[in-house]
Amino acid sequence: MNHINYQEILRRIQESPSLVHCITNYVTVNDVANMILASGASPIMADDEKEVEDITSICTSLVLNIGTLNERTIQSMLRAGAKANVLGHPVVFDPVGAGASKFRTETAMKLLQKIRFSVIRGNISEIKTLCKGSGTTMGVDADRADAITEDYIDDVIAMARELSRNTGAVVVITGAIDLIVGKQQAYAVYNGDPAMSRITGTGCMLDGVIAGFIGSNQDQVLEACTAAVSAMGLCGEYAKEKSEGTSSMRMSLIDGMSLLNAEWMERGSKIESK
Image 1 (spheres, rainbow, N blue to C red):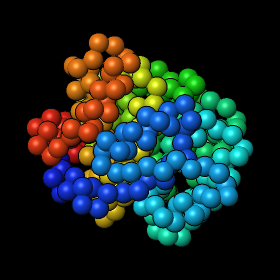
Image 2 (image 1 turned 180 degrees about the vertical axis):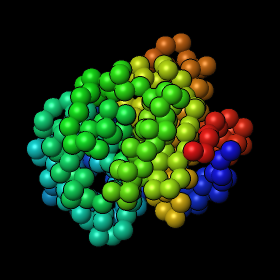
Image 3 (image 1 turned 60 degrees about the vertical axis):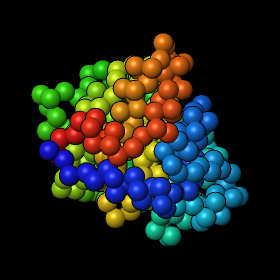
Image 4 (image 1 turned 180 degrees about the horizontal axis):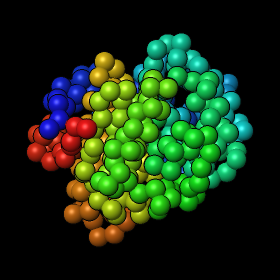
């Protein structure tokens, strides 16, 4: 049983759409921008250190994604994050590949120390790395040994809850089972399709959707995050049915998000309160 008011969350997005500033992975930046637009928000992709503070100032929320990490954008992320914190704007952090290299792990930990995040979203291996300060991942993918199963879902939630309490952020762990964990409450989402993992950037796209949802629902970040994760999963299910392969599935994901409504979410969301 869940307590997500999809109609209210989507109504707020429609009536007060977020302007989302993204400093994100340049491999997936176009898909991220289009997915944000499909969700009802608007994107700005700006990562030069000279303008990120100005851009963050005119936006509603911020995404920091270290997928294509370099020294130049680290400084941009630090500046944008600091400005967002001063303005009280929600910030979404995606520690892509944390644990895969010393540079990525140290950068993720530095951002975690310097910026107050509203949401931290990653796969289980990346989140374990943030919790422990070190770890291993398979490039930008979760280690297969870390796959979330019902057998130890409570242990994963306990780990995520500790990170939430230490950082103040809602922790979103995506995988076969998606977990959205706050300081007290947690949700498990069972929407989605395994084929989504064969498309580069579904996680990056979700970052943008989350930022748009919470930018319009800043008083219910946990619930808005849960709705965003379920929405992405529903779009994955829709795309799998409509597509013939991974390329058409990628396009159908964005189509699905543009067609999303409260009735669809109420009918199709598979969410459990934990």
